[in-house]
Image 1 (spheres, rainbow, N blue to C red):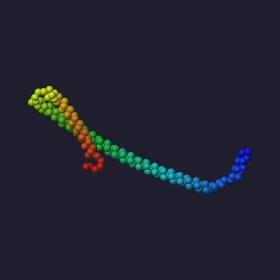
Image 2: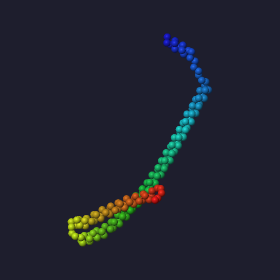
Image 3: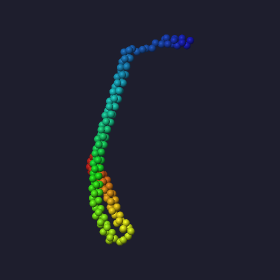
Image 4: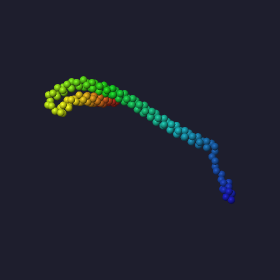
Length: 152
């Protein structure tokens, strides 16, 4: 019974079907819109990728320049530390002899005796410390003078 009612309802139903030309025109417009949006998205993506590539190239150039500056600074620091260490090591025997002569004129005490007996150790420690400080300062100064941009 229900099938008869449904058939009766649908027998009178006559939907209007648009023509093939109208459908094809709408389909063409929709495809053109999709193609236009796809092309615009591709252009935006290409511009974004180009911008990222330029940023990467700029970063690589800055890193290469920084690497070169650091190498130069390390070389200058090593030379400065070597020179200062060499000069101080030349002075250690003269300083040891001077302290030995000075210790003779000082009053005898355990502290003075300990300092004069171990002066050579103190002199070499001072030489090492001075060499390290000179090398670090030379490194910092070299980086300062090689920095990009305006010089003060």
